Image (cartoon, rainbow, N blue to C red; front, side):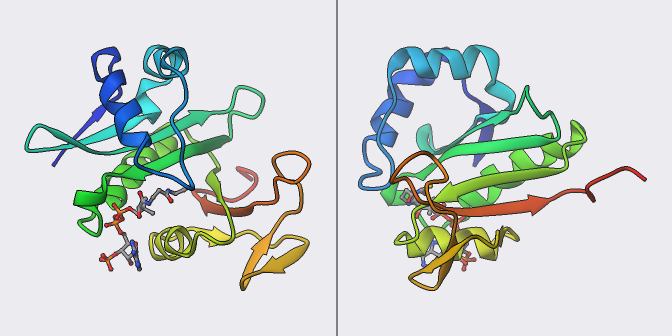
Length: 163
Ligand SMILES: CC(C)(COP(=O)(O)OP(=O)(O)OC[C@H]1O[C@@H](n2cnc3c(N)ncnc32)[C@H](O)[C@@H]1OP(=O)(O)O)[C@@H](O)C(=O)NCCC(=O)NCCS
């Protein structure tokens, strides 16, 4: 498995890959991926196996709070699941975040996405306590806007302050 930063040439393949992620992932537009490949490639690693795009993670270090790195999309091709693809990709993002001295990496998923919950918790992320429990998962109501209740997960890289 080769892990490499998102490159503009790979955008059509990433869009095709994300198209296989329903109902939890849907592809964004070409110009969104152009932005990711041009401004955020180091936190958007792709996994390539036998010249095929096996997985992708799209992440961004916050400009408003540089202590935080948010992971927006996580996707493994159905043919390559349970082979450690996302383990490698998220480890790559965690290494980048650590190198940038971020405090935490966080992501969200829908509470019904049990495979995602199992994956995040297996890889060391913790389910952030919220204001409700849905399907046994703690959620934050309207986290992403009205009606967009999400389970939030975080991986802490260092304590809140450097003190
Ligand atoms: C969730 C998803 C990204 C996991 O990717 P993956 O590359 O298959 O994950 P990995 O092989 O790295 O798995 C890491 C660990 O997570 C857990 N895990 C992953 N898939 C699992 C499943 N289907 N059932 C139970 N545990 C699972 C396992 O503990 C696994 O370690 P193990 O195989 O050594 O036991 C993948 O299933 C996917 O792309 N799903 C559709 C898109 C999606 O829902 N993305 C998240 C939305 S935010």
